[in-house]
Amino acid sequence: MCKEQDHVKKNHLEKNTQIEQEVEVEGHFRKQDPDPSNPKDSLEKPRRLHPAAMYFNLIKVIKETIFGLGIGLVFTLKESLFYFVIFVSIFLLLLIVSSVLSWLRFTYRVEENELRIEQGVFIRKKRYISINRIHKIDLTADVVHRLFKLTKVQIDTASSGDGAEVMLSAVTIADGARLRQALQSGKKSTKMEKNQEDTKNPTKKITWKRLFIAGTTSGSVGFILIAMLAGFSQIEDLIPRKIYNSTFVWITSLGIVFIIGFIIVGLFVLWLLGIAGTMIKYGNFTIEKREKELFIKRGLLETKELTIPFDRIQAVGIEQSIIRQPFKFVRIFAVVAGGSFDQSEPFPVLFPILREKEAEQFLAQFTSEHNIATDTDLVSLDKRGRKYYLFSMSILFILGLIPVIYFFPAYSWIPIILIILSLTLGWLQHKDGGYFISGKRITIRRRRLNKVTITTYHRRIQSIEKSQHKLQAIEKMATTGISLIGSGGLGTHYTLRHLTDEDANKIADWYSYRKTEDENGI
Image (cartoon, rainbow, N blue to C red):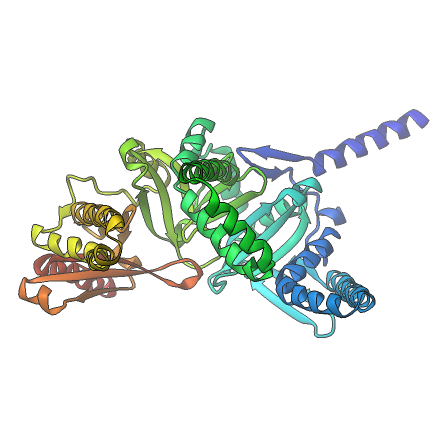
């Protein structure tokens, strides 16, 4: 009898263990079929966030109030150490109590094809989001989340704007995967889901070699330098004037050779930081094509899982920086309507780095609708527009050369070099500009600093604008731009400057004609 009871207990334990086991397949979590009878597996009952959510709420409030709080602490400390301690103690106590109450009063559940959120300490707020209105569900885990085996869930709808419609700051990985499965399964039948799991989806993962190349050619040195200068400008007033002046005198007293060497070493360090940042951000980058969406997972320290529904993709583009152009490397991105993506990137990256010749195969495999036209297909800009590009890029440096020659003749070589570089960039902007129309699809290529080629369909275009200034009208030239819906519901514009009036009219007529066809149901 005892042996039979032990056997039953053992089988029951093995069954529960199997139900709770997480399986990582193709870079994302999938759970075994949950047991509806198990309360832990049921999402119909109100559930709280993980207690670690209180910590994340504390950090969020401190980040939002750090500037004003810092000023208050400085003035309080100058007055009296006793009042400083009292001030800090009361603030922390209120913050902790607020975080605990917010955590206790926040619940979520999935019921009747709706995600239901209840929150609020004194004023209760109830939100009901239909599963059919949910566009994407992203899971993110930074270092702290991964330490406690947690994840952050971001749920977006069409009205999300810049931020997520719903954000669950801390749930277990199992609950996050279960919630995503429940919200997605409500939009498709079990049979379709089974067929999707049985079929191996196209997947591509970045190699460490390519990731290192992406870091070395990212050109992030300038962004890091700008960020450091911006940070220094914020704390400059907090540095004592005596230390500031003595440091400046010490630097200026050094020899010119030492200063140049110091700058070179500094730029090299920034370059290494740029490589490290790229590898941390895009480490283990994997893209998977599913039935109705693209699934992207990336990140070493902070793991992000993004879903991009195909029906939200407005355009697909290829970006090639000046640094990568000689090596024929490109980056693939998408213009996606609505939702919240990485704040550091205006558009979600579909793949960080590819060979130029690999881009066509990648697009055919993952976004078959958005094939980019080749260089031979593009209609190039007329040579009459070249002078406008050269003039607009170099005029400021030409005007700046005159006072430099007059007041600082020894440094006149600096604006001369800048003029040569600006003329070269203007020539490249004219050379790389072009467009191509194929049926209901249009491809536009332009260059500001980086060369960008995008392809989109007429049904995705919100408007087309044609403009002319007087000189353009005399030479029968024009500027044309298309508008798309981008992240956060904001407009994204792609402008092709100084093309012939005939080409501008051709693009406008194509859009008007196709639009009329669509409205008539043709």
